[in-house]
Image (tube, rainbow, N blue to C red):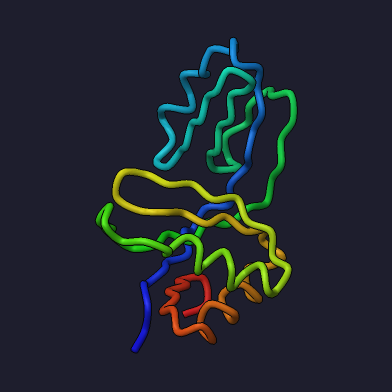
Length: 131
């Protein structure tokens, strides 16, 4: 029986790094999908690569796999298992969680390998790029 279902988002994403004092650019809030994380040490923004930002550093060419949810807070080990499957294939990830679900970002050049590994581990992976 299949585990969770993951779907590859169509966008390619860039992860941007800023100082924590940086004001969030208004254009970020117009993106269909974006993620913002802020601590005392940094501000990180993830958004489609089509949006250009002047950041301290940027890492582009990431693809996102959404764990289709919603996932209840009582569920455990989902992100751990998925990241473990990918770690065994030496695929680096950037993980993001929201209230309802998790997103696992992988570099575009590792996407096919990530999908294959997850399918072998009995995850259902929907990839509208190729299906």
